[in-house]
Image 1 (cartoon, chains in turn red, green):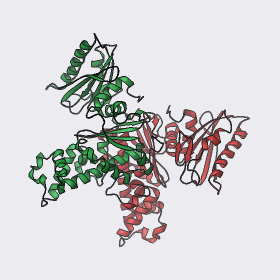
Image 2: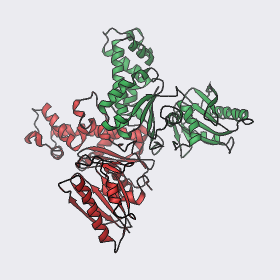
Image 3: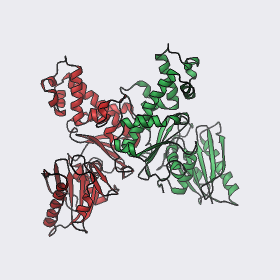
Image 4: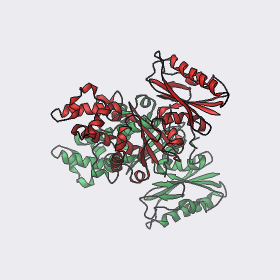
Amino acid sequence: MSIIAFDLGGTKLSHAVFSCKGEIVIEDSAFLPPEKGKEVGSFIERTARHLIEQLTPTDPVTGIGICVPGIYRSQEKTVWAPNIPGWDNYPLWDQISQIDPNIETQIDSDRACCILGEVWKGNAQGCTDAIFMTVGTGIGAGILSGGQIIRGASDIAGAIGWMALEPPFKDEYIQCGCYEQTASGEGVAKTARKFLRVAAGTNSLLHQIDSGNIRAQHVFDAYKKGDPIATAVISKLIQYWGMASANLVSIFNPQKIIFGGGVFGPASQLIDEIYTEASLWAQPLSIKEVVFEKSGLDGKAGIYGAAALVRKGRNRDS
Amino acid sequence: MSIIAFDLGGTKLSHAVFSCKGEIVIEDSAFLPPEKGKEVGSFIERTARHLIEQLTPTDPVTGIGICVPGIYRSQEKTVWAPNIPGWDNYPLWDQISQIDPNIETQIDSDRACCILGEVWKGNAQGCTDAIFMTVGTGIGAGILSGGQIIRGASDIAGAIGWMALEPPFKDEYIQCGCYEQTASGEGVAKTARKFLRVAAGTNSLLHQIDSGNIRAQHVFDAYKKGDPIATAVISKLIQYWGMASANLVSIFNPQKIIFGGGVFGPASQLIDEIYTEASLWAQPLSIKEVVFEKSGLDGKAGIYGAAALVRKGRNRDS
């Protein structure tokens, strides 16, 4: 008895086969077909059929869980994935569930899967109230409250990249929200460019890089060397990450906030400072009860969560 | 068959008797005894016993629901109410449930009761995802998400008065949080005093009032007359109320946000402007789906919610 889990990204598909003991026995990944759209659905289906065929003699597949990069519309059973052209309302559940009616198919957003993965096998084990804050290309949150995933009226909950953290409103927030504009992976680079423009005369390693080419990693590298502009950028980011975390603490009174995504990563070294900033702002009892930690699953929270969907259902934590 | 509902405030106790059809057949309120502490518990108990005795011959009481101003610790079944001296961990459930083992006793926070009241009889009827934002002496939120009340790991969820909305952190936020400091009832007055100090030379009706005596109502009255300082204060408040609402919209993707408490009230006329401000900041799909409205229960959301606790249980919305 085994479970197939998929983690669909904007450019590649990872898969893993979990044994009945919850251990990964096969894992691999492949780039998505260049045609995108329907081809991506067919690629997932083909991979699933191949694995089912391979496993049936020894370890028959009981379920398929899929983590998708966007929104899973649970009523319509369709997927909206902004980075996969043609996936505005893609009927992924229909396509995968028709492979074999005896195999359960479960799909959920990357936000939901990441926190479910951490609750199952990562740093939120035993929690009924925990939040996974992904800081990568964008920013989002998977939120477990009272043992239930927060989905919202139309499955768009957890869009914390849109958090309002600093008035007045600026036009640059229109595209992706105030918090994400400043503090996502791309936001780190944007903030660095802004600080470099303002402090054009300051001696900084970042001035050696062509402004358009600055990436988050350059900022972290320069910060490690004590660069003054990088240090100022990181201070601003700690403030934003701290304020946003504080808001989640005051609103949800969680046991854990788990930081993941490409930026945490290098920003994991800052989690204590983020907690210190959050302590200034948050509800004073709730902040004392919560633990801030990095992901315990090293980039695999989504795929563990996809398997957890099948093991535990989309709504249950235990 | 009838239900007794209590709404406990910092200074008075309101009660209502609901018929089996969900209509209020008796209602009254009384000031709390000056001794506070245990005397308040005994006062509630005495009132309950009196009503039970009065109702038993014609309409026997099946349940008692109580809305408390603070935190209801659901595991310990005790109440923390900051405005009632001695209620750090008050065993209210034990005291009331021992009156008659056949009468169900339910207790919850004012935040939870207000949204449950709106879902039952007010402006959130039919909603599975709705938020009651109370703006009175303090600021808090009762949050229903996916048909469940958000409670948090230790029943402190919804403490949105602590929302971080404007860096950097100021010492004045220590007492009650950034959002509440500026935008609660007391916050309206504090913000007005601050604006008056900065604009000491500006002609304003508010300069006629001794600074320490300025209340929210003075600001709304002066705003109605086009006073420039009051207008500036109200603009700042619309920004804060809009940003905080936007954050709840992006995080929860709710169907409704309901504004209540003493300030809404006079601020109800501003709800359209608050929605306009929130539209700038919030997740663009979620903000289009949500409706902002004032409470439909005219200050009685808490007592309706207390009755709903008994009718529907603390966790169910339907």
